[in-house]
Length: 202
Image (tube, rainbow, N blue to C red; front, side, top):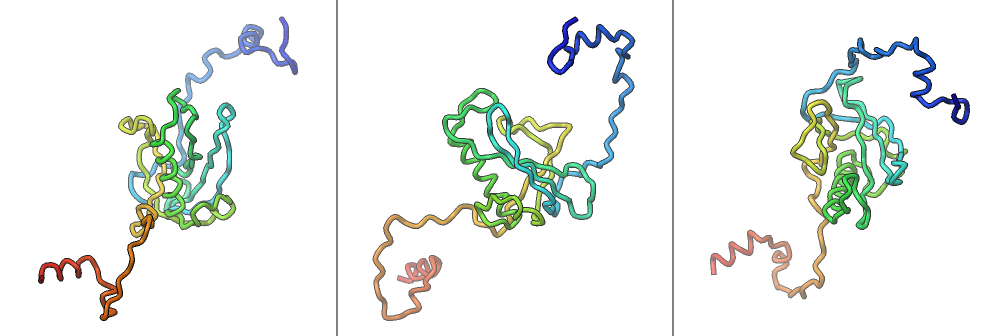
């Protein structure tokens, strides 16, 4: 029987050579989860560690983020993943091409993460993330390609955008209209409601 490099046998050869091995291995296994699964809901989380990693085949990078949940030490889940925004021209795991919707979704998720934990937008120095606190939602995991099919086994952490955070950056108009001077400076602070009230009068 030939051996592979480093004197490692193929698994099938190893089993044949060691007939005394317990071929019922695993039949008595019973899963034990020491970390209790948190009920669905919103929680306060603090980042304790953030590690950069990548998928060997695609090279796509992601950050694995570890958190502690306030009043729930050692709970499950306590880790979530922040994926790099893909680029047009790449292929997804399901073999479909990356669309603009995929790019936008990933950028929204990263933006929400920064807003949630109060991290300066665009700060990808992972050392700055540790210790930051934010509000997160815990709910069933789902495949972003099939959001209606939620996992019955796993839950995940979804960072939440603060209530007062902007929905999207304000876009400046292409060309600002010329301002007309008025005799009364109070018109400079006129609101849309004020304008409507004036129109209703006249």
